[in-house]
Amino acid sequence: MIRVLLVDDHALFRQGLRSLLESEGMRVIGEAANGREAVRYAADTQPDVILMDIQMPDLDGVKATQSILEINPGARVIMITMYRQDRYVFEAVKAGARGYILKDADAATLIDAITRVAAGEALLDADMAQNVLDDFRDKREELPSEKHADLNERETMILKLLAQGFSNQDIALRLDISEKTVRNRLSEIFTKLQLNNRTQAALYAIREGIANLD
Image 1 (cartoon, one colour):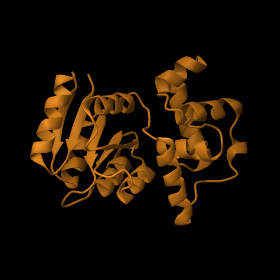
Image 2 (cartoon, one colour; image 1 turned 90 degrees about the vertical axis):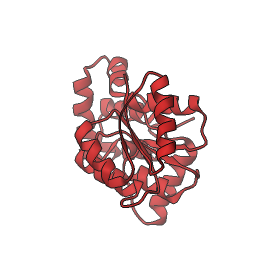
Image 3 (cartoon, one colour; image 1 turned 135 degrees about the vertical axis):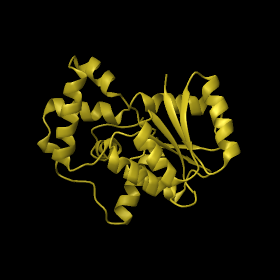
Image 4 (cartoon, helix red, strand yellow; image 1 turned 30 degrees about the vertical axis):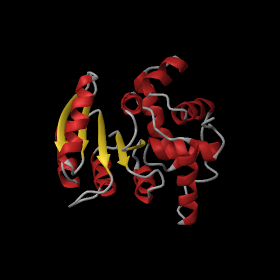
């Protein structure tokens, strides 16, 4: 059963999400009306997936996501937004959010997104990946470059599979290694490439041609 934390400042919207998710067999373990509550609840409950609204009082969704990921780098956050090209979405994905979903998405799309993120995937479509990479370049913020040679063949394959959306468990099965080994190798990859999270690793792999989203 996937455990979900709902974060939105509109109670009616949260109630609608709760009803939908529970009808699909998921468990809503908490609701937060602002970013500060979200940080506290996420630390206390360790949900499988956090649905995070972008614009909220007290602490917005981007800053709340950053705080949550500082406490728990493995947290899986999906941003909820009204607009596909929202600047805040870019900032959240750069911080480590697994992707975003539009507020007008249908129920099947939402359930699929939560299920995929719970399994370890990132919701990075080609347009979003390119937009975030462009954003890094526009702000002169660089993902590490010329570091690809530091990775051995097995590490490169793990990075490729991660970027293609495979969970640690799926990577382990494909490469016939343990899930613990995958976690250890990913930690080493992040250190070698000076990356902070899976989203940055996926972006790096796409930029360097290690993986693509076609």
